[in-house]
Length: 326
Image 1 (tube, rainbow, N blue to C red):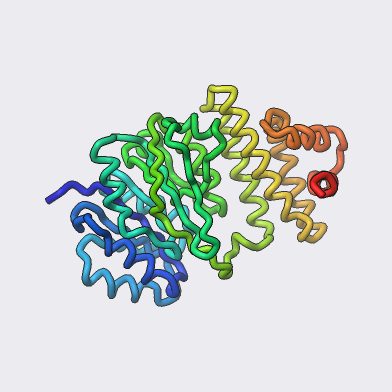
Image 2: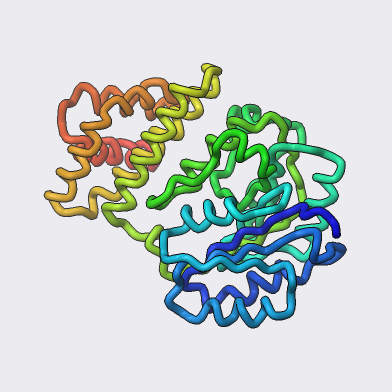
């Protein structure tokens, strides 16, 4: 029996419309035997008929592993997949997306001759045709990728050495949206070896179907700030290089801004909750002050010295920015 080179982890929740295409793309891989890779399905308590589709396909393929759990969210499902994975490398696949027929064979060709921490792969948006995550081949470490500014936060656009993730205790933060924005920068920073694969191996379903992450709501607002807070502490405690710290501070500031962008849709009481939440984390203003963005540094002075609620200050800043870019 061959060693398992790759584990493809697929969380499943309310994707009855898409899961057949997703799972079939994993099963029908060219130039790859079933014992070289495994497909891990994490049933995250889906209430629809998605798992009926999965079980019907699983009857035909011996390399499909199914794990059932109560609904815990995407991060917890991915973490569970990591816990039971046996592959030397792991790949995350969203259940409404799908992979190319040469995904496994291409990854196999890379990892057989190279023991790297991360392989970046290219992705194509289904409708727009836009190619994402095109990273120059000259980049060979995670820190180089961070400084280059070409990092994409989507966790599915990378393939990870499982031992590398384990050695650094790298898992997804559970219970939040925007988990990729919290996970990926930390993982990329730790990567000592990275290969940029130029092949388009991942297909993104960019249909505008209903998604809570595409709507304005207070949880999403808070979760953006929670991600910023996590990355801020990671930067201060782990990141040593000044140039990389500035990149993390830029990301932190952007995440806080993403959260504040929601606030204009909130009631007055909700905005007060946001302001109080940010006031308790006002040390995050340091990220604005030390960001690579000139506009973030301007925001720092407005937040720090106008002495008005953060949501109001951001609305004021947005007005200036809108006039500036007209």
